[in-house]
Amino acid sequence: MSTEPDHRTSFISIVGTNLRDLQMLANMSPPVDDPESIVTVIVSLVHEGNITWTKLQEVDVWATDLSRSPSGRLYAVDMDGQLHFTDSKGGWKIRDLGCPDGLVSLWVASDDVMFVAGDHGERVRVSGTQVDVVRDEQERRLNAVHGCSADAVYMVGEKGALFRYRGQTWSELESPTNYTLLTVLCRSPKEVYVAGARGVLFKGDGDTWEQLNAPVVNITSLAWYQDALYVAAGKDGVFRLGPRGLEKIKDVTLYRLSAIGDHLFGLGGRLVARFDGKGWWGGQVTSL
View: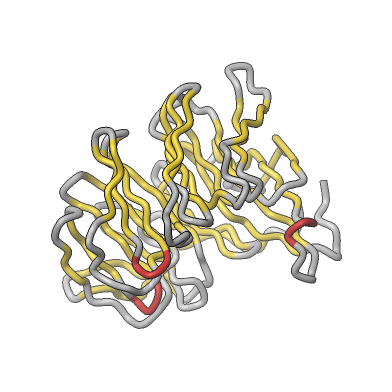
């Protein structure tokens, strides 16, 4: 389909295994702020030579995140509190997770276990047919979720909100900041990175945290690529963590980073960019 001229397109999430096996979630919204008019498209993307794509699904909802399980099945969540997913035959199904205030971020451990962060502080764990929802009394928006196993999962959000799922229960951790946390990356139970507004960036194990040197920018995404931490900071560019802290490596507007195969991918507006450790390639995509 072609993007309508009276709509703007924003690429939100990208997953996959290599340049020829990518899936991407895109929102198409009207110029005026009208969440009810947002349409979400999920496409299969080939990002080499002449970029090609195939539409996999289109829904009249505001989807917020896309994830892929180790088996290759796709999962997405939306602001109506629903989980969209592919079945074993490649068809799409929808499941209501009981969070009408909206779902923001998704991390899939397997086809049987996944975790979802809610717009009003909901911590959701899906295990087979069971859905467990723990609600935040302060209703702080949770912006991101990530884990290194089904028993070691972190969620972060407003006012430094920081939660950990370990074993069978959630616990709120003592946060190293009261600034809003926008992203989390869990490499192991002993190596977790959290980051967010005004350049807050910490490395820790959940109990103790070390602040890392960073400029005063809003850090929106973290990715581990070629044995280094990479950071997206929107209009302020892309950074890499070095011995002295974050160092800018690219002056480009990217809000989401994902390490896929041999490349680091970045999304910003209509821009899809990839990095091979030496140089960047990509550009604006004008239609889907």
